Image (cartoon, helix red, strand yellow):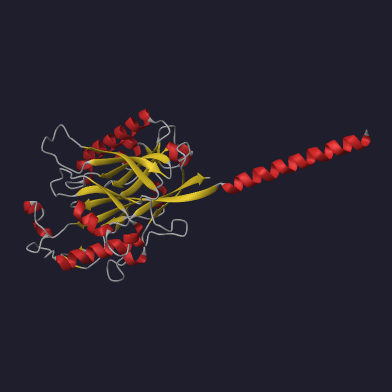
Length: 351
């Protein structure tokens, strides 16, 4: 009898050990995948053809910038170089998604993705012509190996008190990011022209539209990840971002269905994406909903960065460290943009 009990005990131990090994092997089969989601204001990426009258004249050979083929292709090359440098050790193919603004048309994006520096990424384009008077739009570049669009809608920002108001539409791209459903809302909110306080109501209206789009998506799929990105022309603590859209400063403050703004703390640390009169702003934001914080979407937020690479900065002089622009004081400086790109990183557990 003693020998029988000993044998049963040994069998149980063996089965438990086998179960532990199987569990460990199952865990080993799972791995964490990192996905980058970026935004970049390309600062007046116009072609050389004047097809918008006085609004487009400066970016033509006859305009004040003498915008010719040499300058245009140099700009394309510079922007492609910037994108090529967005690769990291954990994202060797660069961001899965790059929202862009201040682009004239789909042609300039086609020229950009065809550049030899990023051609091998096979970046695809989502674009829509907006009613903006200057003729600039928002758009989306994506790597088809990581993101698959399902639906695209474009949303007009109308201001009842300003019947002739024209600005960029908000582009909403719903798709599968490494198999998880996300909605990406790409923005370029109204500028601060006329004064920050005087024009604040325009950006608050834009924030309300973004929130409405997001709420509509969540009504269809409560677990969808929502990403609101763009040049918002406001800082994270401004009313449009903090109150109307509801982007909170800390992850611990987020409520179900709410938004978290990881760039709020970046600005408090003195890190900005745009500088005006010697003070840094962080207009280029990527704001995420609670489903991307708690992992309900299948994706979990890891970190946020301002991609202030050294080559994107003025190397010396009075404005050392500022973004190296295409033009400065009316002179062609052969730079990049007056904004730094921004990026967030998401984690996906895959089999």
